[in-house]
Image (cartoon, rainbow, N blue to C red):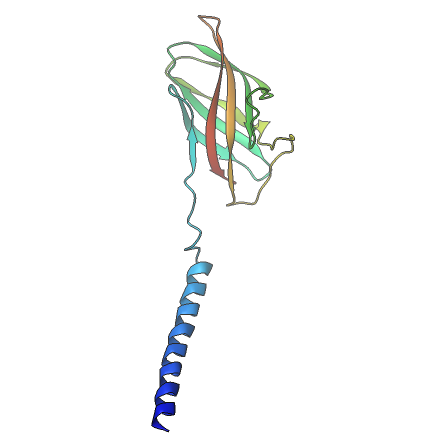
Length: 158
């Protein structure tokens, strides 16, 4: 009889501990402890900096870009996509003149939309994350050379 009582007390104690552990895990999961926020970032190769960017829930993208290439440049096209084809990036035409050591709004929230590889606009809910590529096609006004640069972006839908 004493062994049965000791075993029952042992199981009851561990049962309560297990129940408390399950409740704590559920609360931590509900609070988002197991899904930490992703870092929001926009990076380009050297001499280009994303000063600010915004992605709306309908897929419209805004980008404030700084350049320090040593040249006055004209940005001729831009692409914001999740799956960039490096051989055929399919730029949306823009015509933004940007002097050295300055910044400009390249995408103004209406002319560039982020898309998938099929061209469908990627919309999302407020707070969801988008990770993709930004491709810029630009022309150096003094040298006449044309370049394509590709950057990475992780943004939160606003």
